[in-house]
Length: 482
Ligand code: FA5
Ligand code: MG
Image (cartoon, rainbow, N blue to C red):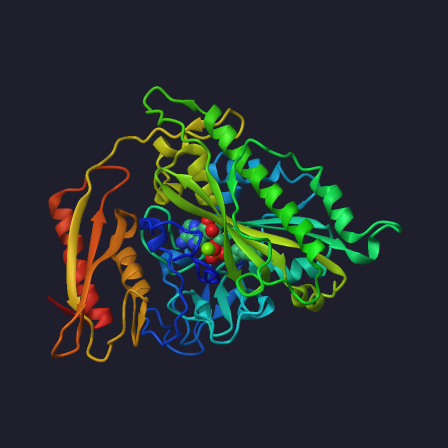
C-alpha cells in the first residue's frame, strides 16, 4: 500500500502477486471524507509538538494525527548513533561522494511542499485524510522526502544531494509497513549551460556514468525500454539520448548501493545465538512506475526471503519542477528509498516494528564502529491469530479491496488496530469479504496477528485487546459486528 504516489505503469513484468505486493496495491481511488476521532475541538485549537522548538500549530477539522504519531517527531532514529537506520544511512551516503547530505529537515510541511510543488493533481488520493496525517488543511506530516525536492533544487547548492528523514503515512500493518518510517531522497542534476564546447550534455553525463563502480556480475532484470510513449514517456523538454544517459547514471548509482548493502550483509558476522540464513543470490529488478514528479519512472525491487520487496521509487525529474525552482537549464534524476527496507536487508531484521524497540537486546546488537553483524532475534514469541467480522455501515457499499468506500477506508481499520494494540499487532489482513445478495450490505473479515517482539503475550491479554478492538470498531467506524 505504499504506492500512494505511484500507480503501476505496467504490471506486465510482474510475477504473481505476493503477500507484500498485495499489501501495497495502488490507490487510484477518489478521496472521500473520513470521520476522525482526533478532530480538535474547534478551528482555533493549537498544539505544541515535542521536537518543534516550541513552535505551536493551529489545528482545524482536518486534524487526524494521533498523539502516538506526533510523539515520533522528536525521535529522529536516522540520527541516533549506532541505530541500524543511522548505520544504513551512512553506508548509503558513502556511495555518493561529493553529494550534500541533509539530515535534519523538520517533518511538518505545507500541502504545497508535499503535493503541489510536485505536481500532484488536486484530486490525487495521496492527499486524502485516509492516507495522510494532517495538522490542519494546509499542514501535514510529510508523506515522503520528496516534499523537500523543490526547495533543495531552488537552493541549488550542489549538483547532487541526499535527504534522510522520518516520513508519516496511514498505511497497512505488516512486517514491512509502519506508519512512521524513514526515507532517503537522492537527486543529481546537470546544467545544460555548463557543457564544455565540443561536447554534448549526453556525453558529459556518460562520462560521469563511467566514474560509478559497475557490477557486471549483477544480473539486474530490466526488460523494458528506458522510455515508452504510453507507459513511461519522454518529457517534451528532453532529448532521448540525454534521458538514456540520465537513466544509466541513476540505475548504476542505485545498483552500486544495492551491491554495497548485499556485500556488507554477506560479510556480516553471525552472533553465536543467531541462525545464519543461507545466502540467497542477489536478484533485483527494475519495474516501470508512475510518479507525478518524474518521467520516465521506475521502482527497484529486491528478492528477499521469498518475496519481491520494493525498496525505492525513482525517475527523471520533471522539467516543470526544475523550472519552477528557478533552475530551468538543469536535467537529472531523483529517487526515494525506504531506509527500513534497506536496513532489513543489511542486518536481516525480520520485522519493521523492531526499529522502534528500546530494548537493549535489540539496540546493543548494532555499532557504527564495528563490522556489520547479523541481527540475532531474541526469541520467536508465539503468534496469536484472531478474526473480527463485521458489516459495514449501511451506505458504505464500496469495495474494501479497493480500500475506500463512502465513509470507510481500510486504513481506518489499520490505524484503529495500531491505536488499540500498538506494536503488539504484527499483521492485519483482509481474509474475507462479500456482499449480501439481498440487502447489498458488505461484510469484511480481518485477521489480526497479535505477537510481541519482546515477550509471550498471555491469553487474557490478547482476549482483552481483541475485545477492545471490537468495541472500538463499533464505536468509531459504526460497523456492526457479526
Ligand atoms: C515515494 O515516496 C516517492 N517520493 C519516491 C520517489 C522519489 C520517486 C523521487 C521518484 C523520485 P513510494 O511511495 O513508493 O514513493 O515510497 C518509496 C519507498 O518508501 C518504498 O519503495 C518503500 O521502500 C518505502 N515505504 C513506503 N511505504 C512504507 C511504509 N509504510 N513503511 C516502510 N517503508 C515504506
Ligand atoms: Mg512505491
